[in-house]
Image (cartoon, rainbow, N blue to C red; front, side, top):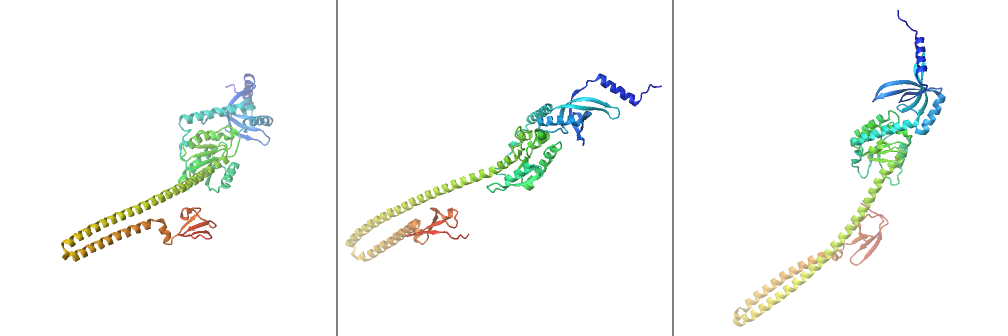
Amino acid sequence: MHNARSISELNQLIQQVIDTELDPVYWVVGEISDFRLSPQGHAYFEIVEKSGNKIQAKLRANLWAFTYRNIAAKFESVTGSSLKNGMNILAQVAINFHPLYGLSINVKDIDPSFSLGERARLRQETIDRLTKEGMISLNSQLEMPPVIQKIGIISSATAAGFGDFINQLNSNPGGYHIYYKLFPSLMQGNEASANLIRAIELAEESKESLGLEAIVIIRGGGAQLDLDCFDDYQLALKIAQCSLPVFTGIGHERDETIADLVAHTKLKTPTAVAEFLLSGFREFDEMLSLQIRRLDRSTRLQLQEQFTVLQGLSHRINSNCMNRLSRETDRLNANLNQIKSASKSLLQLENVKLSSLEKTITQEIEHTLVQESNRIERLSKTLSQLDPKSILERGYTKTEVNSVPVQLVDIKEGDQMITHTLTKTISSIITQIEE
């Protein structure tokens, strides 16, 4: 027959071993899971050990109300965050065995500096991995238009940072308009990273239909450990590989998150992101104004150059015509002299043919004079048409505003307009403009 023990006896034996063989307290490292507070102020949770995402071991933990108040206050003052699921902690615990409820541990203390150090270690490992994979500067290599007019916003609709961002966009003094589409997401907590990744995917899927040119991730300020989701590797990878430039304005002043590192452009706050987008409009306006001024100056110079060329051409045509007229006159005179000389000789030799020859010569002279006269008249008409004054002589006028032809400037009612005729200069005020 077996020497059987009762359950109570076995429990008592276990309690004796714990009391005699184990130290009063131990420091253990683990991750908080299934954290909950009771109405009495006690905290109940599990401390788990993981290998990757697989749980290797776990213990039930109790943190009694009085101890919890002291530990929680100290932890939050150091880390800026409360105790919560998914947080790695270094805890001082006492092993407790209850005959009815079994083995558990009572938490006596938690070292907040460990949680900060553990966070820093994991963060650096993620940065090193992304750097090795060439992801850190991948999104920043995307080209963005000088003026961004359509954006996808990833934020919580109720976040103060989102409201500040929209107010900054809508109340800009330049009257610029930016179209935006909100893709809501959790911005802290264990589910935030997956929410953010899905929101980015939805924004990318809407890229073509909405014409999105960039993605903006914004939230208000928060405690350092509340920003842990922005140090997630999968989220950073999604931002780095995003087909749109990603701007971050997470609203923290101390340290930049990994999401900031892989983003195209990082700014401190949501309002800073809004100001960055609006600055693109202002810079484009300034550049456009400068180009218009340069074009106006260039046009004026070209008009002046062409007017100078036209004056020179007119002078050359007039001079050439006079020279040709003088040469033709000299030639005609020489011909006439030759004809007269020939006529006298012929007259002396053949008086009989004088009348006929004289008539022929006269006709030739008249014909030649008519031809040359027509040529001179045509040249004179051409010269007259090229003379700018001839336009005014035909009844046309030249109208200017601020010494610039009206067709080259924008005019408005109330402007003074100067009209030039051949003999007068008329000043008038514009009272009506019809397109």
